[in-house]
Image 1: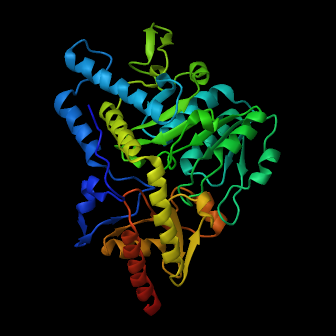
Image 2 (image 1 turned 120 degrees about the horizontal axis):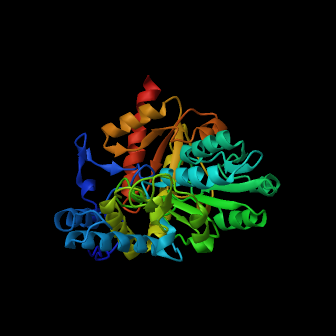
Image 3 (image 1 turned 60 degrees about the horizontal axis):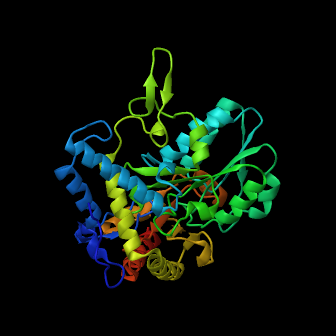
Length: 415
């Protein structure tokens, strides 16, 4: 199942994404909600269609030809994504429904099995709720203590305090690679080195990083890394957890059922080898194949070109929005420390009103707390408007956003 594409001559190659030809409120769609989910290129859509039309069958269980083909495609997809994130071997990649399930898997398997009263879990106030709530639940059940790395007035981790927060009781540090609400890019390699020196493990939420930059889990030096397919041009309902083999082998299963067992007796069972020990039941076969096609698509474009294009667009966006009266932008001022997210408030206009008015102009953004209420509390706001950019966005999209915000300004200046 080939998903190779001919590389477009120049960015933003919106022609590869059929949905970008849609009209919203009679206007051409400007899609700026990429931190929530990305759009899908034709090659990913074709890969899903090809699977369902030609080889749809359950994996691992059947002797017939379709099952054999489906199993090969499914396991080749695992190997493809393992290479995509720099894993040492395909077996270190566990398929999940996405980043949220990957975090819950580690918290519920490693955490409940390894943590005890008085142990410490270190996360940050920058985190998405999916990297807070599972650790809260585990702490409540084990007696472990949850501690936080704070953020500064630009939404960066206060890493000067990090060595003091680490101690002999710290068992795991869990932080995002890139913030979904601020776009802050965290220095994971530095964090990994300090975490390792304290004898703790490092979990990285890579949901916002994998779509935008080349990730090599071995170079980063982390112990766990999670990502979601739907944010990197792949289908929804598929993602991955990478972990070092020795950790996966030591962890108990997270879900019980078919496929994850070796033997089942009346009173006890034994487990399959990794990765299947953590993949109970029929998996998202089509999703795995689709996200492998997305990995091909992104690597064909090259992450160097993606990064160069996104820096240009985000720089222009910050410049344009900063010139609009009453707009306050959150996040790092240095573009080196920022990814493609621009969160902002605008005078007396509630972010939900901003998003509603922009939707009427065909511009799709997100408004709310972005599952990051601790970030909102830090900045003293209940919500922000968030425009998040990806490889198919252009400076013309930024102009449409800015012009639509002019309409918001006009409405609220006369109300």
